[in-house]
Image (cartoon, rainbow, N blue to C red; front, top):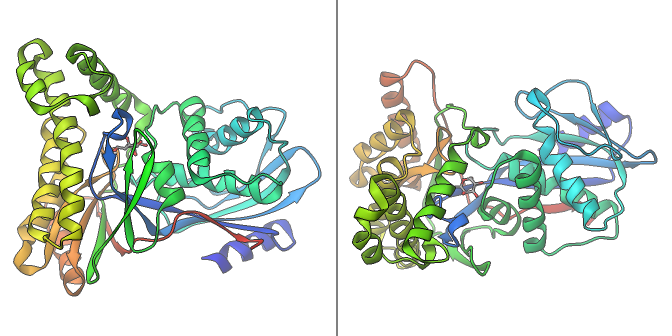
Length: 387
Ligand code: GLA
């Protein structure tokens, strides 16, 4: 992948890149839709990434060539004097433009540069390609200037870009996962105090991603509605955020919350509790408990939070139908939902049979194919050159 990025840069811009950056995607093992509630989450960066090859130019412009899905073509030009959000089919540029604008506003003197963006990370699959693009942009600017930021500071900056330029009121999970994960580990993030605890993923376990190929778009408003529901529920419960509520409190307030807000709040408090339990189960290699928690998480996202879809439900059902006796540990939707991917933990020696099983089950129900790959927990984003 790195060689490919370098070759693409050479062929398009006619010189060698001075900068190479790798920004991975992520899966989330558990702790879904709770990052913006100050909750706990447990993502892992994966071995699929955006690789950016870049070099400085004298004019105050950024020339971008990309092979990210759906965005191929001639290099596009972004003037550093016009970092306003783009509309329609150009809106993918907002991840880049947003980061540049937020860095400029933070006092960074932006360099002009040209960049080739290559990736083996699918976009719109719930695997945080947006956070990867944001983080890659920040790292290119850092590599071309004297600026060097801590991963947490960089993640907050990228989150601000996503809020203000892409219009998605996301939490901090994706940007921190992309930026701060450690190979071989999931990263438990306390999204309130931003403390990070790497939790080793035991040897012999494969991570399988099943992309439903239902394009998820969080900008369409449902994500924002979930966040608003949770804020309304917290206000009614008299707590700063649902992180501070207990299940007993939520149950006691069922009537005043009404059905929808009750279910949203129940998802939040039970999901946050599941993360702590899951971390202990994984560390103690209690795989049946880990699997039960992943399943409970999926059910809660489907029924209480209503962010799943038939394709994701079918993939998860097929996984549990494969079952622990054949090597499944656990499976659930991962990321924002409304399409995107499921993540499954499977015994290493069972992963091929597992993927085949899912593929057949999916093809019996849907006319379009899902896509599958195995991955491993990788390091967070890095500047590869200069090193
Ligand atoms: C998206 C957001 C994250 C998080 C997840 C759901 O990926 O970007 O901040 O809220 O959805 O867990």
